[in-house]
Image (tube, rainbow, N blue to C red; front, side):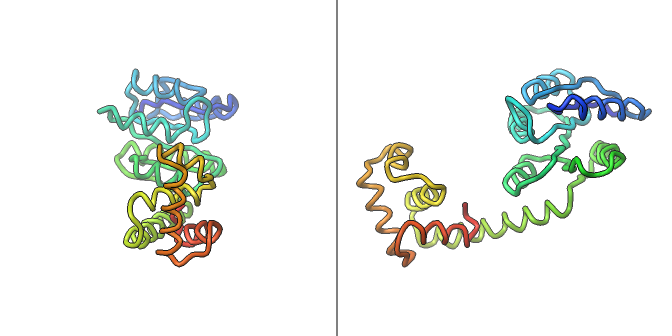
Length: 211
């Protein structure tokens, strides 16, 4: 028997999943949840075989649930249900040990199949999105390694912050250093990477997929 915890903040979707799984003889829904905090509590309490968790939920999202479960020694396998997937969410979920990823646009029968595959110890990942995400991850790691050979750890930290849109004053506050120190590091970064300013730095980081 596959014990299930289901979590989705849309009542119609949640009720639909619950009704679908209740029709399957090998499935038993032990809890239905409307947000990530409730889902985490139910998973820890019931220790289900599989939990189907929506990626976007109030209070805690699906990746957040995965992150919290890393602290436990539970054996629940997690399936992420998503309307859309971005690369960062997907490869973080993969790194956190997600066992299944399925898009809401797919046929309902595929969700049941996914749960059975995951319960049997296999992975079910949406191939197109996973391939794209892992490609981005590989390029990001390669880009990080390349830049890390040139910049110090502190310079990488500051360059990332600039590429993320932070101003010098914000970077200084975040890193607890003087704004003048940030400017000195930036001058060194521009010289090492042969860049002419802030925008060139942002473009370099995007080109290397390091953001």
